[in-house]
Image (cartoon, rainbow, N blue to C red; front, side, top):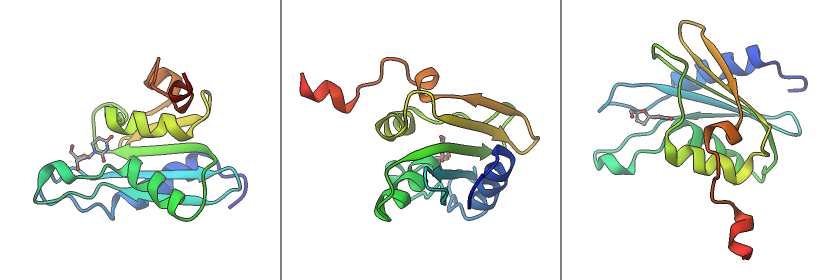
Length: 135
Ligand code: THU
């Protein structure tokens, strides 16, 4: 998929949302991740009877892409059914920060169509990064 627009990526995130496994919260979240070479990976939240084992949509998308050998990403879209555009949790912000360049586009949306464009720098200022491990 070349030239994937924000609108298209949000549509992909909505499709991904419908795959959510969320029998406990019933709160469905979808994510669509665009790789630098134009591929789109879907992610949804996957819950578990051991509640703390839940994996969020954003991390599912990133981990799916990593498992396919992709590590360079240009955009991420996230959608859920909320009043404001979806907002990634703290754990997902940390995982996004591992793989996203500071200004890569993150598109937050909801089912009403509100859209917030942001970056990982805005979402997680002062993140702990791989560079910090090198002293
Ligand atoms: N959830 C996500 O998938 N992404 C987020 O950024 C926030 C929360 C999921 C986790 C859980 O399955 C449900 O939403 C309610 O917290």
